[in-house]
Amino acid sequence: MHASIENLLNDQIKVEATASMHYLAMASWADAEGFSGVANFFYAQSEEEREHMLKLVKFVNERGGKVVVPALDQPTDKFTSLKALFEKFLDSEVFVTKQINTIIDTCLEQKDYNTNNFMQWYVTEQLEEEATARTLLDKLNIIGDNNSGYYLFDRDIESFIQPQE
Ligand code: FEO
Image 1 (cartoon, rainbow, N blue to C red):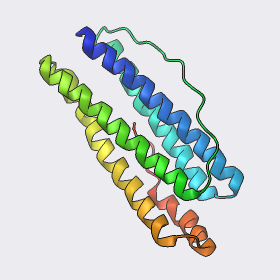
Image 2: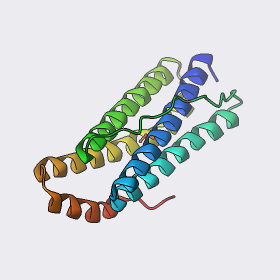
Image 3: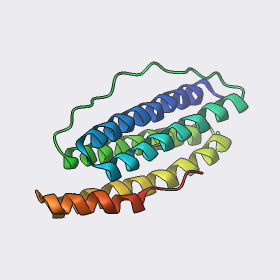
Image 4: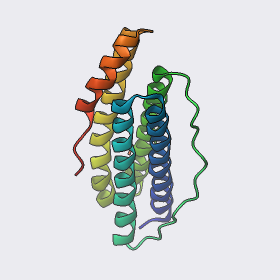
């Protein structure tokens, strides 16, 4: 495995781990605020990001690369509203997509078609996750500042939880 690819995959391990911890903090905030549906959504999302990280760890090891298990910064646990929570979710997913595209660019430059092929799974996953984040944010924009709207949002978000693989 080319060193530049190995470094980028290790960076991505950190990106996925960071997303997992951010979503855990978001789940915990929602739980404390009484939004149990939103909490379940982010608990599941946090678990998914951990799976994304693990998949990378295993791939780097299979390819004979060296995995660096990263130290992480403490995620924020201060949110002002559900809308702020979901804006952060969308920003985070857009950032992850950008990172994945950078890895793929480098794979093509280095003619590492194997890693490119592996990363295509992440491309599909990001498409879904960004679409979910945008849909949920659209719903919150429609709801505005309406408590019964929040109640329904919190109830209905459970249908967006993806079954674990
Ligand atoms: Fe694994 Fe949602 O990025």
